[in-house]
Image 1 (tube, rainbow over the protein chains, first blue to last red):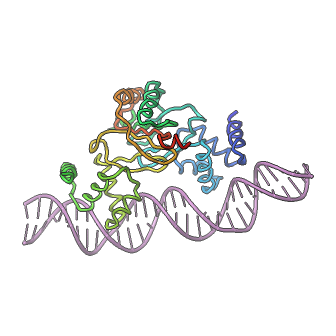
Image 2: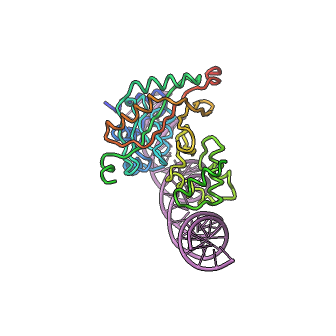
Image 3: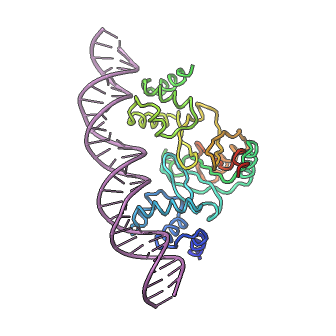
Length: 138
Length: 138
DNA sequence: GTATTTTTTGCAAAAAAGTTGCAAATTTAG
DNA sequence: CTAAATTTGCAACTTTTTTGCAAAAAATAC
């Protein structure tokens, strides 16, 4: 059950398991990447202050990550809490969709990091373009 | 000379070549990626409204792009105005370094976008890890 | 389960970031 | 050089994010 995942994660880090935290986790785990405003309005019973604080907490615990999508950012569960993947975002309508996994890209990224002497920990990839619907109307 | 680049770009798009635009271009072309606030404070003689409007204009003309460096977004000249490249950022010290180009990755990204029916226009890639110096001290 | 301690929440208020309308100034075109 | 068109700076405004603190909820000890 998905509450057990967040329960365990928070217990591990010695922070309280609260109703707002569970609800925010639920929303994030059942949606495509969300903006902060979308998260806030999707949980009107939770104060925006709590939303900001919870997202900051989750980020610091590695539960949530931010994606830069053009000028804005969106939130999603980090790779430990859902399958590793990347996104493509429509430049016109803003819709965000997951890309299929590509082992070759993943491997080459590790190699590139090594060339610079870095020890890679994580990466993020965003493609931008026109979605099928917006291609038609363009 | 570098002013001629921006002169030509703006003329091509039928927009005026003004002093603020030249100055903002100069700052961008002589620096590592900058935040909006860094850009604004580095040009105190230019009003922030003008800075926002100019960056928006440059972005719409494809002169400037935003990218994610760590948690903040930063601005840099886009691929047409400097070599296409990606970055690796050190999680510990924040240092940002360019990654060598990789044709295989570039090609596969186009293919992935096509799978989703998207027409890819642009992409961004950020690797995070530990730089050589921070690996030692860790 | 209840009392006590600790942590977290919601609210109000404020700071920070980004946007808009418009008159004055600058740039472009003739 | 002049007239037309575009852009700038300013002030006011909206939106986004942060802070302090009392009340509420959760964790801990009994």
